[in-house]
Amino acid sequence: MQPIQHQMMGYDRAITMFSPDGRLLQVEYAKKTVRLGNTAIGMVCRDGVLLVTDKRIVDKLVVPEAIEKIFKIDDHIMATAAGIISDARVLVEQGQVRAQQHRITYDAPVDTVSIVKHICDIKQICTQSGGLRPFGVSLLIAGVDEGGKKLFETDPTGIFYQYKATVIGEGEPEIEEMLHKEYKETINIEEGLKLCIKALKKVLDQNLNAERIDAAYIKDDEKVTKKFLKEKIKKLL
Image (cartoon, rainbow, N blue to C red; front, top):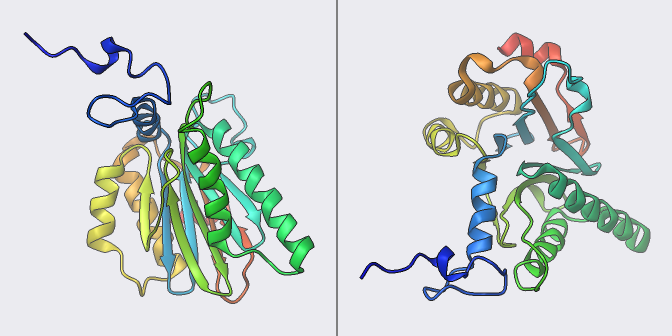
């Protein structure tokens, strides 16, 4: 007799229900949502941190500048996402509130890992509470604080990892392979942007243009989030 699939048994109907082999199927579905999302690349460079993402403009009547895929959490911390972007916006707003609370309480900028942990705590609650669904989004959070430059990836379970370079969303396996081969810790922000655009071109091919790319960086000496101008991206394309 063939084993009955987990879905037919109803183990995917509630976030609080484990399948017989110890899996939370709703969380795994959320991870699949992330893999279908827009491509986002993060990188720690010699002189700062870099985030590059695909805006994935699906309608030529949409105003490209109105699509925001890189968010400023504080002057020295930024984030991007793959998956359900509305979920990301809510999490980013929670991070922004925490950052401002820290400034008011301690009169000092918050460290990057505190923001990451706060966002992951919210994600984790939604994996064990009845009536909720997991956040269908992964975030890349990059910042430069007193402890140096850092890049973190969070997933729908509430787990986070620190990376030198990473990618989430569409085309993840191909770009990850490219990063393993071509990324070096001595790379600067300009070179990192070139590598990220090269990786996006490999995945998106003919559909890639400057309007689709959102790119931002934070330099060690400035600790301020800045976006690359479209003219700069057009030159690299």
